Length: 113
Image (cartoon, rainbow, N blue to C red; front, side):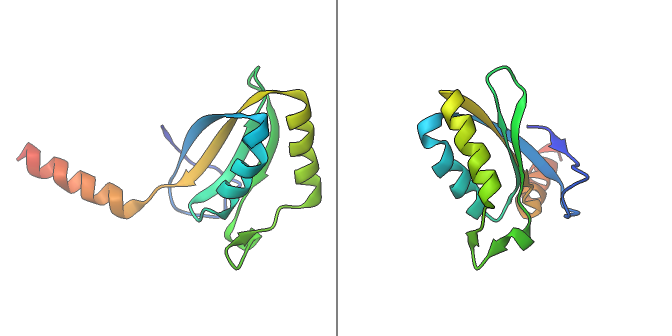
């Protein structure tokens, strides 16, 4: 997982990307779960050939009281993806947890000394 800087995300924190294969019958639930996670900033649904079918930016402003509100057009696009593909890849962009990274760096410095 390589750190990346995404210009469309309204956060100054570093991000990283992970990819997860999901079957179409679990896709909607997985996207809703990810939308509720505070560290997730963007979810991209990739077709089997690697093309991006749906790109869903998730910002703090899109969350209302901890429950994500996904627009009807986005849900319709996810439904189309489910109809056409049995398996897709989710590309998840998350904010890096700086507190955990700082602790790891300190541990490495202690072992190097």
